Length: 216
Ligand code: DX5
Ligand code: ZN
Image 1: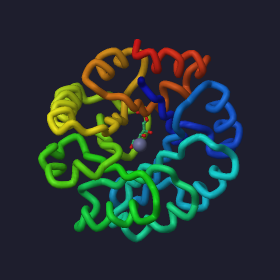
Image 2: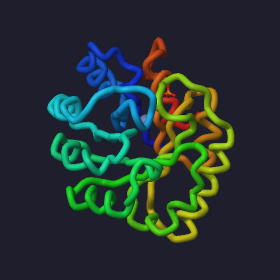
Image 3: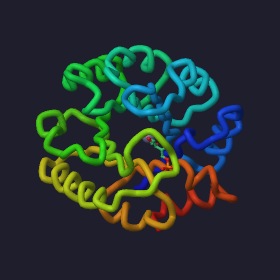
Image 4: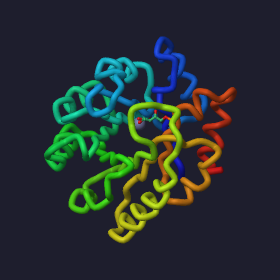
């Protein structure tokens, strides 16, 4: 089963409520929330207050992608704000295991995100405790970038790693995903699709979400 996680990074920031209601009606599974700090990535978006208010507006799963240096400083704030899944970048936190423990202690699902160049080997010892791995298929910071084709090899390798251990971990891919490449991405083992521009720039976002979920 493929889940679709539209990224509100591509929404009109003055009309978030409308975007949330549109995504609910369109059958989105998660709302992907891209938190950027202007340090880990060269862009700035929003923080825990936005998640708090989104939480009031929807029951959909809030999938919070922290593109923040030293995310451990904010895990508690995002957990209290109402995030359901908290995803931190391996490259951004010195003590990844401790950061993951913080997320679990807060009662949230935990995920690790990897930049395109980061090898899967960094997951070796933490994989078993994860709910989700997010593979970046663009360099993080902006919506609307082109998909990096080698991400498909990485997804296949991650799927093999997860299956070899008999684990049940979602593989999420983020960046440059749309109807043009969904079939390949799904075939590579990805089961949570993040889509920003493909959903929000479409004339019929519900149709795009429906087709992404079908994986074709
Ligand atoms: C990029 C973000 C993505 C982005 C995806 O740094 O993490 O979630 O918004 O946008 P599209 O689907 O337009 O590449
Ligand atoms: Zn993201």
